[in-house]
Length: 377
Ligand SMILES: Cc1cc2nc3c(=O)[nH]c(=O)nc-3n(C[C@H](O)[C@H](O)[C@H](O)COP(=O)(O)OP(=O)(O)OC[C@H]3O[C@@H](n4cnc5c(N)ncnc54)[C@H](O)[C@@H]3O)c2cc1C
Image 1 (cartoon, rainbow, N blue to C red):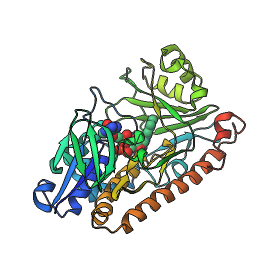
Image 2 (image 1 turned 30 degrees about the vertical axis):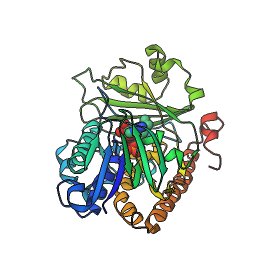
Image 3 (image 1 turned 90 degrees about the horizontal axis):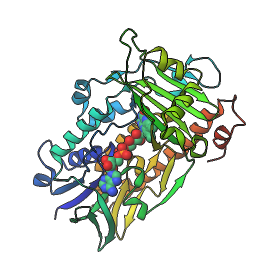
């Protein structure tokens, strides 16, 4: 009898999981359920109007995964640009070329992130058995299957679930415990370029400050993506509501403010706020009432963006869904357990790396933001 897998989420991990499941079912084209006895149901909320996702640095480790998912041509045609240089003021006042610290795998791409997500969506939509352009509102397992209720009232039954719903973990949070290493938040904005007489630099810029750190990257569309990472109690409420407070924060930096001003970018609106802390689920995969589930991407483990590998990890996890769930659906949990171990090993490795990175900044060692990052987890 055919099996059904529900994939939840349409960011990075969700479409990667759809593509991987279809591939594991042995299809080279067409819709999954028609030919292979595997139905892939994709709950894929449409992007909100004006959706302009933050986070554009893609590590080179993503390239082989994208190739395996059949996305190399889409990547080449999309106008993403190679990121050659990262300059950072981290551990010292000077701006230095520090690729080795901040991009352990070498240079990557600066994405047109909205285009990247749209390309992923288009490819996954073409092969999913059914696409539900809505959200999951409730979920539970019983009688050896998952039962999902959608926001439009429809109910779905699936033999297995991939939860790729991001930090909200709509299904997996019912089966696992969330752990958190910190409360990091990001205040981020995209700045328009207002001075045609200046060609903005293409380097990515990182700057550590007493209360956190800043990031600036020139997007392929010419906007400057700027983000300030700090803890909620150190940010206060005003910068995200008050342009003058945001402008004053930027002006308090040594490099970022000058970079913005000299290149002719306009600070024309207060920033948006996102969670950016390191969190993970234990376990990140398993069974409930006999029905397998796996969390993928930020749902399983979300990392401090200093690593710049959130998207790559999401692609990796989604791409594992095919082999993990096709064997679990046959009653063999070896791959499911190995996946769970890999995620948790990755978290442990990341926490050690994160501590080492923050320890390199000694100028502010006694300030709360930096002291909090020297603890054991
Ligand atoms: C400020 C900031 C900067 C970042 N910069 C970078 C960077 O430069 N490089 C990098 O690699 N990573 C970066 N990241 C991390 C990266 O954005 C994430 O790791 C990545 O988006 C994870 O992808 P995902 O598919 O797991 O989750 P998401 O991209 O969050 O996608 C989740 C999906 O689930 C859907 N969803 C949510 N709830 C439901 C529901 N109830 N039912 C159905 N669907 C649901 C959402 O609509 C969305 O489609 C950054 C993160 C932040 C916060």
